[in-house]
Structure formats: C-alpha cells, structure tokens
Image 1 (cartoon, rainbow, N blue to C red):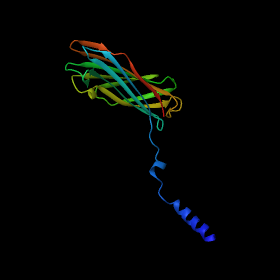
Image 2: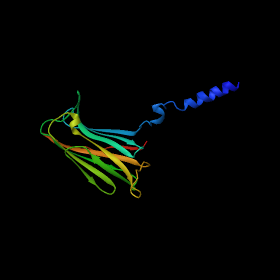
Image 3: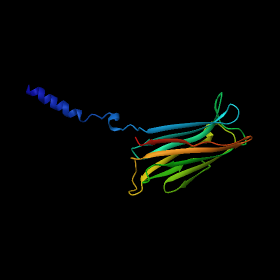
Length: 183
C-alpha cells in the first residue's frame, strides 16, 4: 500500500510539468456588439442604406467601428453612380461625461474633430464605386478623464448620417446609431 501512494505522488507531481492547454491560459477575446441599419427612399425602387457596426472589448478598453452607406436596389446592395459627392458625419460619445472617447479613423478623406464630450468624424466620398468604398472604419479608446486609464464601465454610442448628391438626387439620411457597453 505504501508503494501505491508513493507511485501516485510521483505521477501527480509529474503532471505539474506537462504543458498547459492553450485554452486554459489564453482568454477568448469577446466583444459587446451592436449593429444598426436605416433605409430611406432614394430614387424609384432604390433606397439609401446607412449602417453602423460597433464592437467593444473590455480587456483593453477599446472599440472598433464601421459606418457606411450604399444603395439598396431590388437586386441587392450596390455602390453609387458616377458624379457622386457625399459627406458622412459620425459622432462618437458616451452618456457618461467622465469618459473620453478618443477616436482614430483610417480613411483617406476624413477628419476627426475632438471635443470634450464627443468626437466627430467627417468623411467625404467622390465618384462611383463598390459599397465598401463608402465606409469609414476606426478605433475608439475609452479613457477616464480623471485617471487617464481605460474606462470600461460606460456605454459607447456611434451615430452616423450622410448627405448624398449626384444627378437628380440631393438627400440627407436620418441618423443611424449603434450603442453597446464593454464585454
């Protein structure tokens, strides 16, 4: 009986040196997400579609966002015709005034205006193209005003609207808003 216990102790202590499964040490990156879409009559059977996608990660206090617009036809989603000029305005904020949303955009023709309570991204689009041409992507870092540390106990709101102008069309969409918290 003494040998059995000694043998078990040796095997048990050796188990401590086996590699730990990756799933046990690597946290799975989960995001709190929200998606919003708005449709507005455009010309004939076509509609102007605006959308906002928002994913927030609690691990490092950041969110990824995509906002954009396209034309929804009876045959599916398309881009816009030649001669297009469009200006998309996107506001990023939180309902908690102590959270600063530091926004970074990735587009070529965009400008980020920073202020105390919210940041505003303005993107200008020119000419025809596929639907993904008319999108703005970016990152939001949520920061506490008083400590400078990531702030993850707040909500994040992304609202976008677009003015679309081309031959025979000059229309501004209503706001499309996505809102979530950190997960």
